[in-house]
Length: 328
Image 1 (cartoon, rainbow, N blue to C red):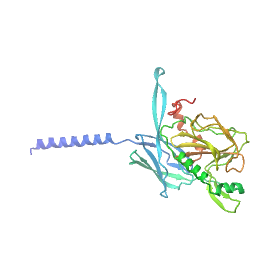
Image 2: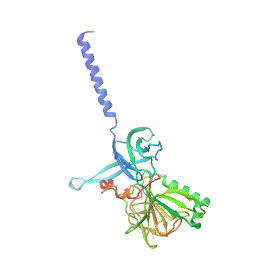
Image 3: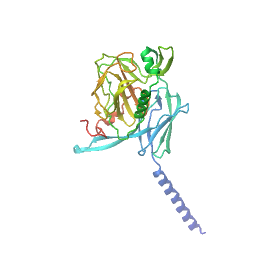
Image 4: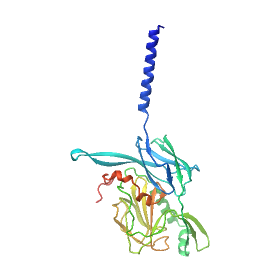
């Protein structure tokens, strides 16, 4: 082969290689994940991201090889002012996640899956400890029987409760700002994450952790919705008494237990600060109080972490709701 022809063929081959590299680079997804390097037990996080298709989910694998539930990708819509009074709708994507209060410490891994459950992204993170307090709770014979006595209705209620909290409604985007306290002038009597030892009247005992925050007030104290959402449960239960569950975001629920009476019904919508009931001592309660809880895809998280989160500062002009129309 003549040198000129050989040189020309090499140039063509080099050009093809360069073009293939450019095409390959352009085709490769550019993923962006904004996540703290260190995450705390029992806290909620909005993990903002970009480049991920709809239907993705994020899962934690902890140092002891246990795994969290899969947290869905949520797309929030906000409006930004443009010139001449016009507005432009933008999309902010985030995984709304929670770290279990008893999650194993040390190096963990986040894995992001596409809607076909294929791994498309991984990243290491570190889980650090919270110093959970401990307390003993003494139960009289009536409350001991309430907890220990087998009851088919109690089991049916527990199953329905878990099914509700495990439901992920992709269109249930209601929350427009951080959560608020569900009572005015709150007086916390039991913090989130406390390691509790129940001492029963029959001499037995059990150990668990406190999955919410307790507020002590007078019996006629009004309880308010801590954030905008949809009521998915409002009923009297054997263990938790008069209980309300509000859906705020896909997989994100706030729970209100032991109320004396209820002011809302299932399937109704509420705004933050709307009355939902009156404080009481129904169910497994040793005194008048409200047990306030937040779950993300069944994972209990400290409600205070969703009160102080700063993600919503980007959503100050968010569309009020993506489901159910206006709050009428």
